[in-house]
Image 1 (tube, helix red, strand yellow):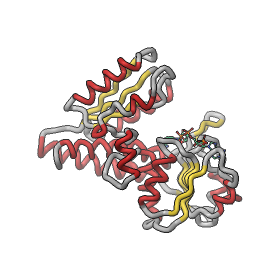
Image 2: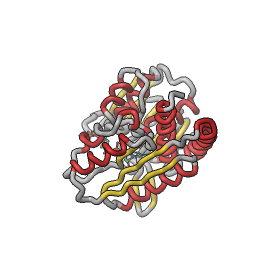
Image 3: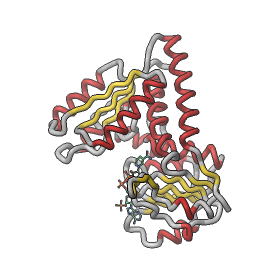
Length: 284
Ligand code: NDP
């Protein structure tokens, strides 16, 4: 079997095109423009590139985009003050604080200082609670992007065995919650999991969010399974995922490439979340 390659880049472009049309229509009707603020602390080169991409795509979709670059030495209190001013700014409808933060700043304090209505990353405890109790809130962008790709390719996933490898707050846990919401039978694996190859063998869907290059092997895969690779790893200056694409793609039914799979979906969903928050602020 040769897996169907899921083209996340193309799906993300379609989503951004739909968002662009919607933003234009709302602008014409109300005179208002959605605003996305991206807060970056320090000058990590990888984060800078990522933030630059977000700004470019936000502008292309007709958003006002505000990049707020703060010095590495900023105190937690000063950062919280900045977030408070963005919370109060009526031109900002979605906001994210680029992670990771410097060690002297408590990540949870910052995440929970963002107004949950503007929490475009969906990390605020209120949005986490909403996701886990089936209420409408803002959902973390990367898992949301994975779910869009899955549903587009598999249709109904209810009753399917889904294995999420990784239990981070930003990918693994919300991914598991989204799969459960779609009535998949969900298993979460992590670094203490003892029988990962066996668990993989029973999975119709595998979502890998580990951060280890080519970790998931072809021998572990159930023929025809759908493989969603969240991992972004750099090996010999080339990007690769957490799933060994070259070999697993001969066994699986569906697979996302790295790059060009989940990555582009994350920014598209960030714009989607900001648009959702913008519409809510206008009651439309
Ligand atoms: P974290 O480091 O926060 O989490 C990694 C998870 O993998 C942990 O839960 C860890 O388990 C688990 N893990 C580590 N080793 C093993 C192992 N041997 N077997 C099973 N599980 C293991 O990473 P993130 O969730 O933030 O990101 C994961 C990957 O996804 C990274 O490559 C990151 O760059 C990428 N990423 C991509 C995005 C995109 O837009 N495409 C967005 C966000 C992340 P434990 O909890 O026990 O330590």
